[in-house]
Length: 205
Ligand SMILES: Nc1ncnc2c1ncn2[C@@H]1O[C@H](COP(=O)(O)OP(=O)(O)OP(=O)(O)O)[C@@H](O)[C@H]1O
Image (tube, rainbow, N blue to C red; front, top):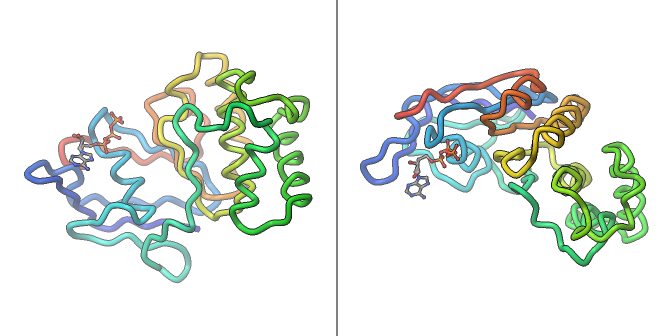
């Protein structure tokens, strides 16, 4: 689902975070959303998911050029919000269960997605025993089985070392054609893995 941002402005009190900012986030691509700290990356993701209101401009989603809708978006958490005592499979299943899939089908989808992301052997392992990189992939797997048309990941490499960031870059590259993915990141490895880049300049977009 393509997201088109046209002349978007957001201010918090007197602080202008986005000013007359326009960009396209193409469908079925990984887009790296880059820009200095405080340039408004998280604010833009929030606006594109319908949580933050624009002061002016417009965001249009999908072929119908609809308003942003939070139900279209799966968020990959920064670090992890996995339930530690639950297995990787159970954590991923939650993404499928959230759209009303039956328990057995959710387990099948979770196993399939874990396998695709190289975690087939870890499906039964409690999340608290997984590494940072594995947990990050669990987060992506859960977002993917939710089958929402848009995935947003805000600084997904923040808590990862270089080796796990490389893994994540590989995962992102392989996910490219599945859905529309936007990754807010400073990380050159993740920027390199994306097929498209949108940059915020800072001090007002
Ligand atoms: N709800 C809010 N109320 C007031 N100010 C806000 C709010 N949300 C964000 N800001 C401010 O807007 C600016 C942009 O923040 P944002 O988190 O979007 O930037 P970012 O590019 O994601 O930064 P980082 O890379 O450091 O995460 C910051 O100065 C921040 O303090």
